[in-house]
Amino acid sequence: MSDLHLHQQLGDAKKKKLYDDIRAGRFQQPRGVYTSQGGGPGVFDLGDLFSQFFSGAGFGIGSLALAALADEKLFAQQPSNPLSPKPPHFAPKAKNVIFLFMAGGPSQLDMFDYKPKLNQYDGQSCPEDLIKGERFAFIRGIPKLLGSPHHFARHGESGAELSNLLPNLASVVDDIAIVRSVQTTQFNHAAAQLYMNTGRQIVGLPSFGAWLTYGIGSESQALPGFVVLLSGDNAPDGGKDCWGSGFLPAAYQGVAPATTQVWAPAGWPNARPPASAAA
Image (cartoon, rainbow, N blue to C red):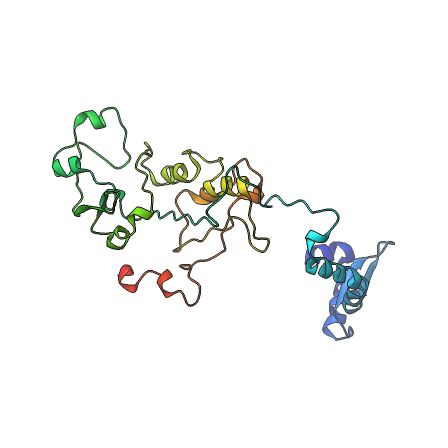
């Protein structure tokens, strides 16, 4: 009970007497103050209150523990669970989905999206027809074109072009799919991140992970169906809407554990960036 509430209920004189009794140690156990039905002050023993609570709630707590240990599949009426697995339209091959959204990573133009024409016009002024009528947040005047400084080569039976930045990926290039057909006009960080994760540059739509969880559910009953692991001290510029549920029920939104450090379980040293990367 706040001091103001105590003052209103007991008045100055009675409040002073109660405080004096507490300071003098006349209460052997912690006490609480309440207002009796007659309007006067009353004192109850918190120790007795706790004892009554645990003695009266013992059977209820035991029932909850038993229900948690029991196999829900044996119940006559199955509880409703929005995350229950749902049969897909086709027989699935993948067991899990791990989606890495690496904001601030190297440009695709330096890794797997080779643009020979861009290299051809490296250092030259951007053609006017590409920027006429466009408004850019950080560009003034006529910008210069910048080609990639990295070398590209074809790899695997597919002939996929990768730069020298990805030598290990080049050895398994036939086992992956590279999609180059997606594009957007969103160049600001927050809007582009929302577009990438939700399909729209504005807030309020379900994220990629929320749609996936809504569509097929999750076999795990001990963990959320959609878990978000953040690396670094800051969230994406697009904010929590990058893993939100939008107009879908909140059960399908991503769950991001609270952290202020780079996420990496003990024993996973390679999950953290090397010290040289922070230099």
